[in-house]
Amino acid sequence: MINHVVVVGRLTRKPELKFTANGTKYTQFSVAVQRNFKNNSGEYEADFINCLMWRNAAENFVKFTNKGSLVGVEGRIQTRSYDKDGRTIYITEVVSEGFSLLETKAATESRNNQPVFNSNEAEPIEFSEDDLPF
Image 1 (cartoon, rainbow, N blue to C red):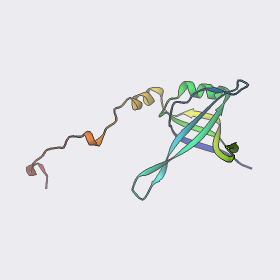
Image 2: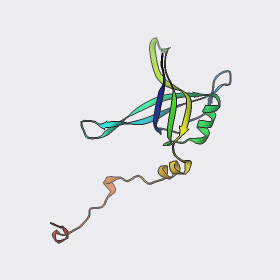
Image 3: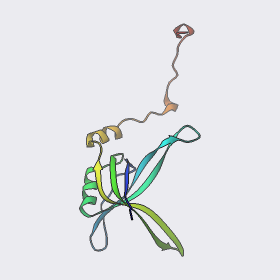
Image 4: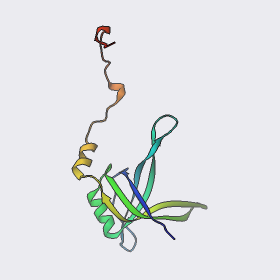
């Protein structure tokens, strides 16, 4: 049987290193992956893929990534469930077996520090009919 997945996208938040009760390192994170087609409104949508990474890979991933980092995650799809208030909750996630950093840390930080343009704050452009080329 084959259960292999590769996800390329941007981190939705800064990953945090966590520990299980017996001290095993892990991190959970979400990768935003833009779809290759537009919806009915003419916009691209994204899928948010939940991922889980263990041990030293998790430690390195947390150390070298940040919100917005472009990453490649390779692993397998895992489903699990748990009981919450009498309801069964199902989770599907990618358990990472490896990752690649697909841009430099400086590029990520530069993009994250750029001001966000708000179209409501834009001033109108003034021009006369004589300025038009037709």
